[in-house]
Image (cartoon, rainbow, N blue to C red):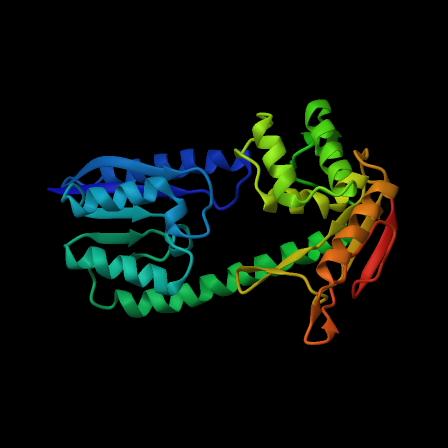
Length: 304
């Protein structure tokens, strides 16, 4: 008798895709139960799409069970649902094969205990990776079109609550943000401000303050009610800082401000003074993009 488990994973982070897990689970349960020599042991299902297997807890639990000898075969829908790239797929498949555990890919009809499976996996994986790249490129094109039209979807940051995809000042946190700007404008440094906040017991959701936290707040244009879009971009599945490689968009008056433009500009001027330190007789350039200023390469200012 073979102990068979199934692995299901959604391909996006949208909640409505959870129904895909239900469908995949029911499909494999019915398929396994048709085999008289098989015993269905469990279905492992990850509800979020991780960029690699380390971000999928159920996947890792399944591998642990296989290593303990509790699973003989793993059924899954497709190669793209199992792992993100050919190298990762082959590594895991070969590791499982060494301990006598097979993986069956339903869409491709591939059994990894078959001697020809590595060749077939390579062909299908290359095709799957090409499809993922095309999907990724389409998503980026649509995102840039939204940016160009001034459509902004921001994430939660300290000082704001995220309500209906819009940033709304959180009264208690907003007061702290204003104090951080005011203290820096009055001459307090990053370390001193962080120390003051920690001594007062004013903590962020992530914990205690550090000088880096203070720096990130002071240089964030969102506290003026504006938003720079496309600060980063993805290339070869890696997130990179946008230094002018692709267009950026500056949306003015996107949401309610916490600090005035005057205070923000004063703080940026002080920051630049401290950044422009002599080095071998020269000054180090530290360009900044301020509210209403389109000095960065391909920076487009949009009015909201």
